[in-house]
Structures are given as structure tokens and as C-alpha cells.
Image (cartoon, rainbow, N blue to C red; front, top):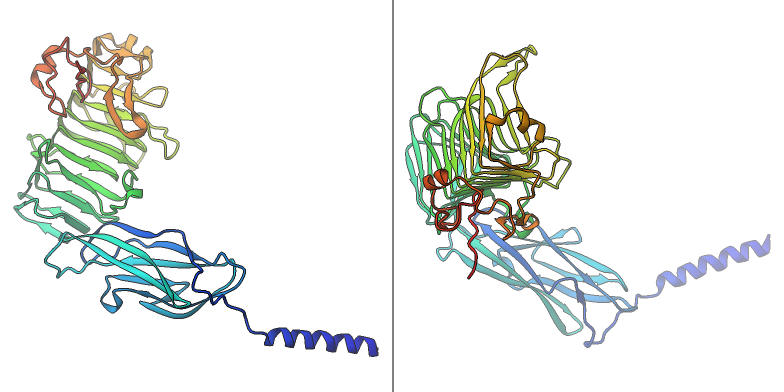
Amino acid sequence: MNKFIILIITIVLSIAIFSCEKDEYITSSDIKLSFSKDTVMFDTIFTTISSITKQFTVRNSYDKNIKISSIKLAGGTNSAYRLNIDGYSGNILNDIELRRKDSLYIFVEVTVDPTNSNLPIIIQDSIIFSFNDTQQDVDLVAFGQDVHMINSKRIKTERWIADKPYLIYNSMLVDTLHTLTIDPGAKLYFHKNSRLYVKGTINANGTFEKPIVFQGDRLDKLYKNIPGQWEGIWLMPGSKNNVFNFSEIKNAITGIRVDTVVNQQPTLLISNSKVENMTSAGILAQGAKVYAYNNLIANCGQVAVALTIGGSYEFYHSTIANYWNYSLRTSPTLLIRNYYIDINNNIQLRSIDKAIFGNCIIYGNRQSEISIDKADGAASILNYTFDHSLLKIDNSIISGNPQRFIQVISDTEPRFKDVSEYNYELDTLSAAKDAGKADIATMFPLDIKLNNRTIDAGPDLGAFERIEQP
């Protein structure tokens, strides 16, 4: 028993002695902290809107502890940046112990001053680490941009110029009998869950040099091609004479939803435009009238183009391509359907008066990319024609409807340049080269890049005319 008591006393004394020992710190001014980044860079940040949070680590690679006397923003309380250091928020933190072989996590955000009259600007600062009579720093760089702020606004007849971007929060609505005209070069950025509703008319008439852009408001490189960042554009019942020319609509849930027509005017004219990276559909038309040419519609989680619940549709020199790889896609690239199922599970017929695809490419990474879905025994019309187009479709559908497939190419790769880089121009050996119908090309002599498709051996299929270099 005496030996056991002596052992306990010895352990207790050892612990006490060890606890009283002071941690040893490196005091040399020659040591260096290790940083995971020497510069923290933010892409364009809009006024009043906080940035995403960036982070980096500070590491002590030595076998002894380091006492950092201070970590602070060089800009002090006037800095546009904010720090969070291991859970502590502020512009300066004193007496930080960085234990041996350990790391410290630092999180950084930035907000642009909306009263700054010099926007766009570069916002620079640095985080200074002071220890052992020496200093190290990590640079902070962001690009600030002023915007027109649109917050849950009902738009009357207006013209939006391209002086600075438009940032849409909580959606917006172009009101009935009113027109929103958007100048070439304008950029519209939509915050998460926001949508452009149109009950009146939208006239987005860009140019090749100055396209009009509709996309999410996350401008950091990681989000460049990420779908589902905003809701998309909804042309609602009664909307008419909408124009999208040289426009880029990207990274939404549904690019353009074109709803049931209740008048004789066309619902949508879309030309020379790109609709890309949608989690659901590129163009979803329901009983509408759509006229489209020189468009790229690509990379959608369900369908690239869906023509449903009746309507009238014409697509010329369009590339409709779906190589979606974010998840398993079970829907075709193109869906044409002349009915819907109501809430009572009854089939309701809606005639499709015409669905014409001339000099088009419709392709993707599924076995068949076109679905013609006509209700059995339906008296309603589903009138479609594929004229001089390259298609990925079951050949039995072609052979069973020869009058609807006029000189089409099937079971042949279009040989796009690089779908992984979203480049749907044609390779020199593409079967789509010079395979178009001259009469259709005469209607649209210039392609989406303003190349003349009528001056060589024949017009190429799709939106892009390949120009061979001499």
C-alpha cells in the first residue's frame, strides 16, 4: 500500500511540474511562416453585396511554437475586407500562439463601397503577420463593380443602357402591355432563386461584338459553367413579340420558358444566341409560337428543347447538343409532344401545327436524342419535319416516316471541336460540313459568328459555318 501511495504522489508531482513548465517559443527573426496562398484573389464583386468567403492557412513548420504578436489588415478599420481567424472576427488579433507543426485558418470577405465614384476599381489590401521583430504578409485583391440594383421590381416601359451591370434580387416582372428594351452589351446578373418574368414584351437585341448576357451573379471562376444558379426567363401567357438576338442565357434552371399563346403574334423570336448549362431545359415551350435561327442550345440536365402542349415552331441552322455530365440524364435532347396529362390523369390533346427543323444538328451522348410523343389514337395534329439535318435518332423512326425526314444524316458523329470546352464548332471532317439545303441558307446567309455560309461548296448544318483556312 505504501508503494502504491508513493507511486500516486510521484505521478501527481510529475504532472504538476510538467504543467508549470512554460511553452518554448522560437525567438529567432530568421524563421518564416508558411502560407497556402501568397495572394487571395476575388473576381468581380458588386457594390453592397458581400463576396464569397475565401480561405487560406498559415502553418508553423517548426518543432517549437511560434508566438505571433499580431495579425491585422493593413487598411485597418477603413479596409473593405473582413477577417475571421479561427472563429474570431475582427481587423486585428493579438498574441496568437501557433503550436509546432500546426496550422491556423483565416477566412476573408470583401464588400465594395457603393459611394465610390471611381468604380470599376481594384481593391487592394494585405494581412500583416508580426512576430519576432519581423513581418510577413498575404496580399488581398478584388475587383469592384457598381451596378443597377433591381429588387423585386415591376417594370413598365423602359430602356436599359449598357453603362453598368444590372443585379436582380428577388426576381423582376415586365408588366402587361409594357416593353423592356435592353441595349447591346448589357449584362443582367440574377441572384439565387431570382427569375425574369415577362407579361409584356422584352426586346434584347444585342450584336456580335456586344451580346446581351443573362446569368447568375456568382462571377468567380469556379461558377463559370455551373448550372442552376438562378431560375431563368419566363415568357408568361399573354406575352408577345419577345426578341432575343445575340444574347447569352446561361447557368439557370430553365433558360427560357415560353408559355401558352393567347394571341396571334409570335411569342418568341430568338436568333444568333446561346442557351447553355441549365439543370432542367434550355427552351421549354408550351403551346407557344417560336421562330429560331442561328442558335446554340446545349448542356441541359433534362431536355435542351421541349415543344409541348401544342403550338407552332420553326428552328433553322441551330445546334441543339446535349452532353450533360453532372448527373444521369434520362430525357432526350429534343422532345415534341402534342398532349398533357391533367390533374385527373386524363390526356388533354393540343395540336402542334408545325415543328420544322431545317439545316440543324440535334445530337448528344444518349443512344437516341429525339422523342416524338404523340398520344395514341389522337385526332389532334403533330406535324413535324426534319429537313437536311444531322440527327441522333432511332433509324426505325426515320424509315417509318420518310416524308418527315428529308435528306437527314443519322448514326454519324457531328465531330464538334471540343464539347468538354463547350466548343460546338465543326471539325474539318464533320459530316455536317456543306450538307445543308441552299434555300434555307439563303434565308440566313450569315452564321452565329457572322461568317457567310453561302460562298463555299454548301452551307454547313447547325449554327456554325466552318471557314477553312487557306
